[in-house]
Image (cartoon, rainbow, N blue to C red; front, side):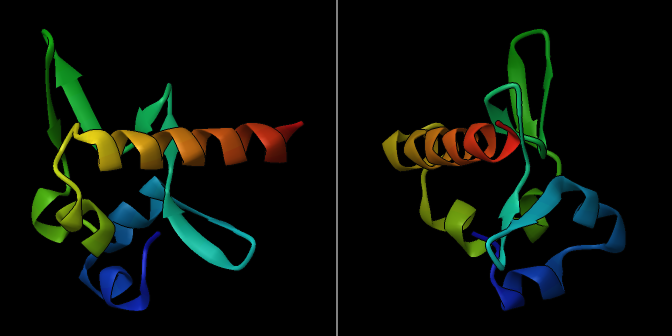
Length: 82
């Protein structure tokens, strides 16, 4: 979840990487991963690393908490779209 203090760190162009649902702001999920991730030739990195939300700072990149959070967000989005 993107908290108020996280939003303060994000640049205006970073707002396109977020979405609101149920009165809460989250990072947008695209193809099963955070929209802020960029991948080239099998290497991925966060395009907003220095400005990333606290939830991302607390979870190890690609670790169980990170992947579980992405899976939950993707499931919520799928339900919202149906």
